[in-house]
Length: 378
Image (cartoon, rainbow, N blue to C red; front, side):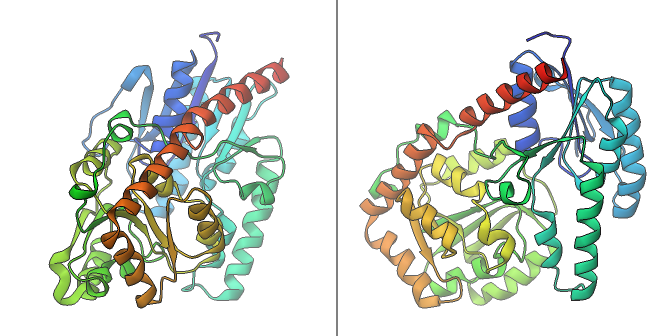
């Protein structure tokens, strides 16, 4: 790959060590010979990192969302324009306008779509329904106008139904040799379950917090950013079993290395994802599924059709009704009483990730796609 091909990734929202942006796309492109620059917020520790040959141009941290959307976007645009890149990749809907401004005849602009934003808007119960409809229609109109000359990268399979011209670069996990080689034994399994990723109401935080009351002596470890107000609600939900939950990540982002260390710390019984039903999550194959599988953990998740089909296809977990305590209890007791089954489900998942559901396969697609785009620009 010509070393003169410059790629700039831009985000005003995501953490500078976001796994999909930094550890997957930026590092894959750098290893393939591209000159990679990453424009994102300054690292929380205040340092400017030039990691693995990737240049990081930090943005001013703005806690006010409106100021971030306006002034953060302007700052990101100025920094991005100076790079005169061959390829620009932006990762937030608020950057659609600067993406349109950066587009020229002699460059490529890619919108990397991480979320189904329209469905997400329609689920905001605190906003009147009529207003949600207007917001969604306005967003779709702005998106259509701004991205008509851009390429679209899709993180989820079902996004293809919304963006037929998009290219799927799925958010499969990086293979972690430490975790994939970790031997799990029946006798060493502990009655502890793990939740990784952002902790929110929509992602089942209050359901997970009640698990120790549903399943005796079950300990629940949360690892991921969690608002302190939600953490208080979770402790309240746990009640007299509050000592059986631990929330690591209150008001702070947890970097990948720390999460990996916690995976390896215990012989966890399972990884959990008991989400309440929402249109957004019911369609997704959660990134945490692949991460649990990579670590050899069976999955206990909500019985949404897509999720149920997934765990049954790969024989890697149990799907339950997130509102049925008896159903939930049976699932955990099944694994607690049959440790051999728990180990087998975990190994089935690990094998699927090692052979197919991993970033290595998506990396090949990413690099092939970039080659095609550059040749087309000619």
